[in-house]
Amino acid sequence: MLISAKRCLIAYCLLHFSFIAAAQQRCSFDEILKADIEAEEALSHRLVTIEDQLSKWIVNHERIQERSAYTIPIVFHILWNTTAENISTEQIQTQLDILNKDYAAKNTEIEQVPGIFASLVAAVDIQFCLAQIAPDGSVTDGITRTRTFVDSLDIDNVYSSAADGQDAWDPALYLNIWVANLKNNQVGFGSYPGQNAQEADGVVIDYSVFGINDHPRLNLGRTLTHEVGHYLGLFHPWGDGLFNINCSGDDRVSDTPIQDNTYAGQCPDLAANLPESCGSTDMSMNFMNYTNDECLFMFTKGQKLRMLATLLEIRSSLLTSSGCQNIVQPQVDKGIVSIGPNPVNGTLYISTFLEQAATNIELTIYAMNGKNVYHFEATDLATYFSHLVAVDKWASGPYVLVLNIDQEQIVEKLLVY
Ligand SMILES: [Zn+2]
Image 1 (cartoon, rainbow, N blue to C red):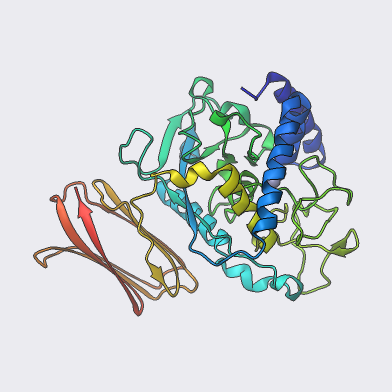
Image 2: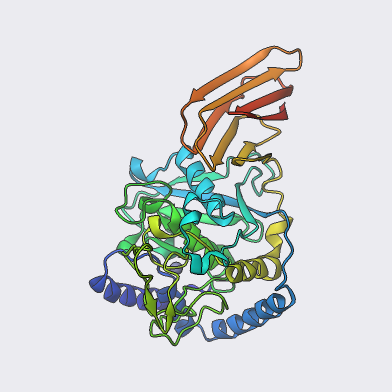
């Protein structure tokens, strides 16, 4: 187990100190990595080995080919004490869609990237799905819910059922994301490859900044976008995790400018003079900054390469997972549609995340004899749409699902069992 009591003490001291200066900072990654390196000598050697693997892969893949996205199965572990902490399934689906849209560069703010950085914008070719198959082979909705009976949790406690948390699903096959009321004003942490013991490998996020929420600055679900970036091998733009915010750090990505500002609590006016530091214009809108959610827009091509290198070199076992084999994601011009699981025997989840709000969505499901067994229609929708269909009392067998989104039509064969 790499998480030591020593680390907890060091991390707490660092966090305690930092919170005097700034309450509820964006991310605990730098503090925890620094404390881990001080607590475990072997970690530095592992990080050097991993860096060597990543840099070799990146050198050989700089002219990356366009391809369809790799998909990583996610399990969300909801650790709750109060009702507000027991986040709804709809909220989870909303957060997942935000994550997918940000990684696909399909977020609406992408148009606001300043001209100086426009050519660097990347769709990362990594998408995420709610696990449909659990480690034991059973059908799941990709969500575990655990009542904690404590007011709040240290990050180190979320990983274990014995410590008021929830044991991970096999981290080789699933991205584990723990959602909890975190102690010490922490809002998020993503474990860097090789950093945590396998049973604690994944992402931790405070319930208050999850999905679309009421937080004054972190209200659009981008804390998860940021923390998954760490999980996929990214550092903050100002450094390599050792908290050198003085132009001496480097995130090991060639196309992100070095900066000495975290942009915590800020939202620079991009119509005015762009912020500068360390002799160049800062990319304050990069997802790996601490900038407010509404002002985070993009990953770069260099970050994309580093994340793909991490997935294919260090975390490649995720691509052998059958956790999401039942999700269907038909292409539509307007954005992303997700239908699943299919086959289904409990609840069918349908969600869209569109470029432009749809004026009409119509869902009809037909039995094979042509009989209409389910119909739903809604008008004047937002870009995000989520709908659940309970099929648990339906007769087993094939059905045909027809989904109309304005002028576009999706037809999928559905199997209820
Ligand atoms: Zn971070």
